[in-house]
Length: 112
Image (cartoon, rainbow, N blue to C red; front, side, top):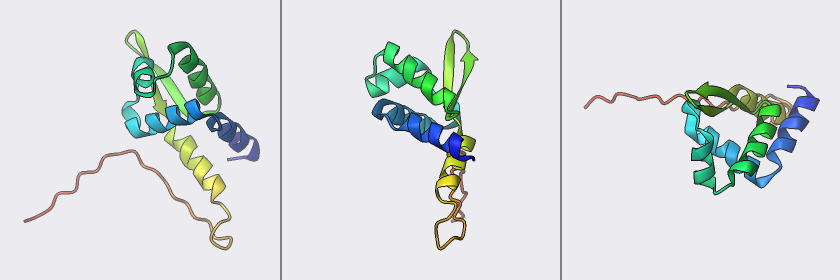
């Protein structure tokens, strides 16, 4: 990720409603949420939510796709991981630390 992209992403997240929206979409995983679900969960008016979703999409932090009559919003995990890697690029004494979020549910079978 380049400096300009990181600044745009961080600016988008530097607002409480957008940060809450992004975190909710991360929690929802790849299934995403429709705007009514987001608004209900966060108590944000639909007109305000529309503005915040546009800002997050402009920053590349979320994607949207048509889902019947609604639009489904999903966190862009690649962009999120890119931002995390950018922020941690020179930590640990200059050695890259690359924490990565993989939004896949993994079921581990245990033997008894």
